Length: 397
View 1 (cartoon, one colour):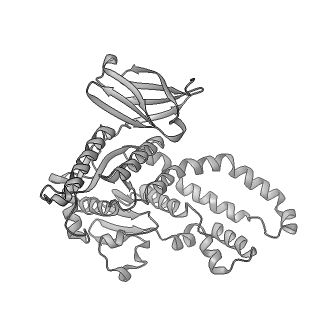
View 2 (view 1 turned 90 degrees about the horizontal axis):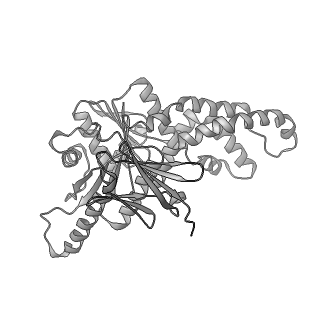
View 3 (view 1 turned 180 degrees about the vertical axis):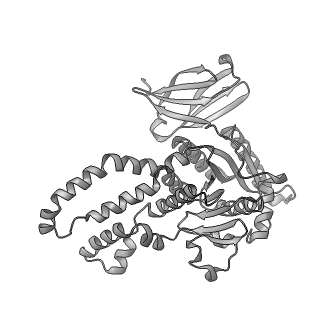
C-alpha cells in the first residue's frame, strides 16, 4: 500500500490537490481512499458533496465512485470507538472540579486524539490491504509534524513510562482513593492505552519507509509561505520521512498579462527560482491559478491533469532516498547528504543564518537546520562513497 501525505501552510490548496490526486488514482484503477486528518475538514466540500446531505456520513469510508472513497476523521465517533475508557476518566476528573457535563466532554478531547485515530485507520487498512493508496490531507504544517512524530513519542512512553506508571498506581490506588478527592485511573484506563498501542504497532516504520510513504509539500510562490515550507522540509527530514515532491500552487498563468499583476508575476518567478535551488534535487511542480473554484469531480480531474500531465502516475516512486539526514554523536552533530558522482575538489561549503549551503560547481544545495543545530558551526566535512558528511559543533569563538 502507498501512503501519500499532503501537507503545507493553511490555505495553500493542499485539500484540493489531495482530492485531485485521489480522483486521478481512482481513474487509473487504484483502490483509493482520500482521508482528511485536518480537524477543520473541507474534503467533502472539495468534492462538492452538498453540505448537510453528507454531514456525518464521511466519518466512515464513503464510496464516491468506483475505486474512490472518502473519510473525514470524526473525533466524537472516535472517542466512542477507541478512547472510551480514557475519555471517561478525564470527564470524571473534570466533573470533580465543578465543570458541567457538556464542558467536561468537550475538554476531554485531548491533543493528538484525532491524529492518532487517523493512524489507527491507516495501520488497519495497511494490514488488511483494504486500499492500494491512501491519500492523507493533513492539518497545517505544525500539526502535520506532530502527526508524524507521534509513533516514536508513544513508543518511548510505552517502553519507559507506561509499565512503571501502571505498576505504581496499582500499588497505591486502594489507599490513595480513600483520601484523594479524585480517584486514580482504573486499570481499564491502562488497558485502553495498551490496546491502542497494539493497533498502532509498526506504523512508525511504515511512515519512514520511502517505498511506502511519500510527503508532498504544497506551497504558494510567496516569501512567507516559502519560509514555512522550508521549515516543514527540514522537520519531515528530521523525522525520517522522504519529501518526494514540492508543489507550487496558484501561479499566475502566462496569459494573464495585465500590468496590475506585473509585480506579482516577477515576485512569483523569483520565489520559484529560490525553490528550485533550495529543494533540489526534489522536483518543484507548477500548478496554475484557475479562474474558478476547483469543486466537484470534473474540476478536480482538470486540476489533476495539470498536476500530473501526460498520464503521470501519482503513486509512482519519485524518490526513495532522503535528501539529507541529521544525526547526533557524542560531542557533535552530523548532516549527511547523498552526493554521487562528485569529486572532493568540486565541493564548497559555508553557513548562512540557519542554513548550510553546499556548492557543487555552479549548483547550490541549501540545507535548513533544525532549531537545536541552528547555532552550530561546520568544522569539517568528508566525502566517502558518494556521501558527504558535515560535522557541526558549537563555535569555540
